[in-house]
Image (cartoon, rainbow, N blue to C red; front, top):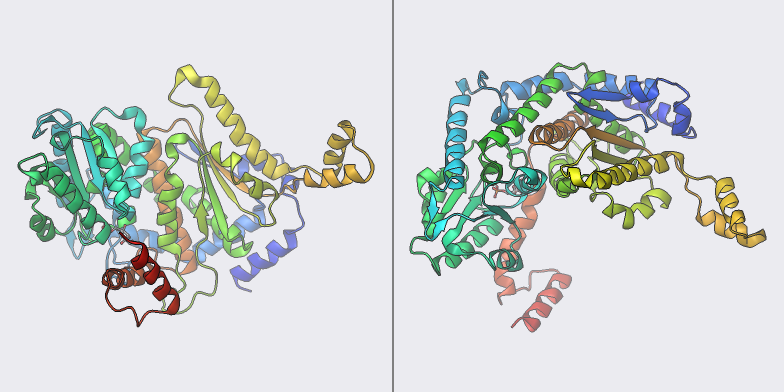
Length: 535
Ligand code: F6P
């Protein structure tokens, strides 16, 4: 029997079992918690028992995760549909690292660009590079997808370390985004970063031109207050950005994996090179753990296996990421791209249809806000949503430590409630104590039942620091990779975004009045409405 079938059979056999029963094993909480540095991942509140874990670990081994991991770290072209190496790990590799692509060490160039980016960021922060009206007070990063989500999420996450100019991120082609961002900024003291790997992305290039026009209203040389992060030096030059203000990176860094290099320029400007180095060191520590730890104690591997268990074996189609850490508010959005652009695919590496579901829908919001919004469904809806909680032992506001304790209590309460639930007898006792009886007691009690037995994991860490943030992001990157390998997916291409882009390009002229007769009737009607209602 294949491991997939064994897992399915085992899952069916344990379906009626309550997760709480697994804690009859007094060592479970410790045994189902894995450490990486000071960080802990507790996956004991899932229905994974020792046998399921053994089977899952065997699945990872049989799927060639170790071989694929080693191939990735060695610079092999594992992104087969694009013929590229996958080397985001090079961007955070140590000083001694030698990583070759096509026989050439890529590290010297990478270090040189990083040094230039650090130098630029520190010059701006120290006022050695000025705007045309004085010191740079604001930086607007224009980018989308991986050229926005990673740096925007990380900039917010590291707010306690901000001692540089104010950072603003603009991504949406909706003019409202850039208009609202630029309102109140002074072109003379604003630096604009155009962050686009390809430098062709329509949203980014449109916003970049809008920003340049805005800049030109007040400064003599708009290009002088622009910087670019891109792999395409010709296109940045054509836009009017001087080569010393352009920070490149190779095509073997995928957009959604690019925060570690020059795409992180906004973060470098906000927190400085030293803190950015710590961020890289955190990721490097997770890389080392991923490469060295045996699978049964390997945090990214186990997080991936928990994901495989919930999505592919138990059939839970979504997972919620719930950071009890306000500064990780953008983590769910960041993970939506990382996970769904990487593993949202229906064809495997071999060109054949997947035999299983692709990666899950990922969603979430920071706690405790989510509690007052969608936790109702998580606790009492008919579908099970595996939850992934994140929690720091301490916050950054010592004077508000009591609020952090309240936050932590809420986080632990939610995973406890998901685990335990509330039985009908308990609900009846509560309603009886309120004076209800008979049929009304029964009716009211049923609404107050929580089925419980709902799985969750908790990632807990001392504090959200640059090091911790680096660890967390690298953890999720490797988790996605391991899940992709097990599913036989290439996690590093994104063909699924192309069709919409092509059709949008074709629809632009149609909305402006070109012939729409080859469009479907629904699209034609929507175009007609737009034409009728546009000023
Ligand atoms: O939407 C697809 C995508 O290619 C993402 O993978 C990428 O992060 C984003 O667009 C932005 O691309 P670029 O950095 O080339 O502008």
